Image (cartoon, rainbow, N blue to C red; front, side, top):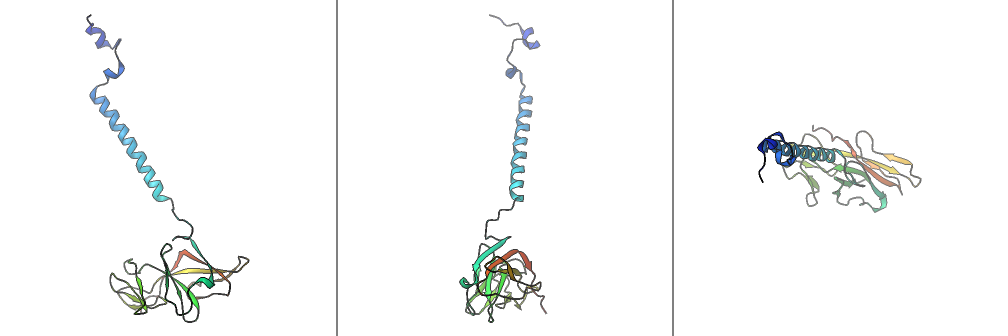
Length: 189
């Protein structure tokens, strides 16, 4: 059986997949891979743009519960790692929530109980228990977060002022730290 080459040249009676040239196939493959890459990039950007905050995590309100469960006067500051703050109770019983990031270059500082101060391991900045700057290179004291106290009826009874002063907490209050609301530390003198 012989095949008439004129029929093959005209395309009559042939398989359309066999007619695709190598160049056409590579063009389709290139466009398909470009489409997949574009879709994957769009998904990654969408996931990056969406907030991934769970309850009690940094960037939103963190409910600490009743004030009685928190450290007392004179106790070492308590870290809240998920919400990125240190909970400090000053000598008068007022509360401060200090942002866990050094204002110098963004290192995570630590409380040193044997020295009774916060020390940044990167460049040696030192801060008092209340967040005031002791030793540079940090340009200012530690940043504070807004604390809100609510009564049993869920009414706001106390809130950190705009300067970030320590908050005197009423008895039986439920405490919420607003980790998305930071008050910059005082400038170095």
